[in-house]
Image (spheres, rainbow, N blue to C red):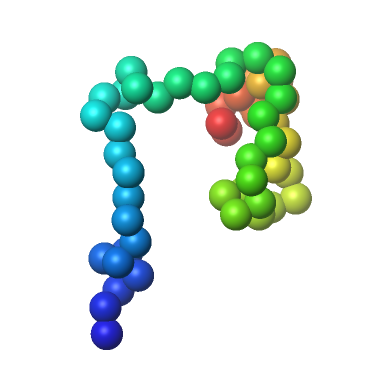
Amino acid sequence: MSRYAAAKPYVLPTSLTALDGPTTGTAMLPRHIDWGPHYVYDLADEADFRLM
C-alpha cells in the first residue's frame, strides 16, 4: 500500500519571488483549500493578512 503523500503530485515555485498574489481587498479561498467557517480574508485586516 502506498502513502497518499507519495502519490500526490506537488508543484513548487523555483524561488520565493515567484509567489505573488493580492495584497489589498479580500481573498476568498476555494473550499477544498480552506474548509473552515472563515474562508474569506480581508487583506486590510492585519490578522487576516498574516493568515494568508
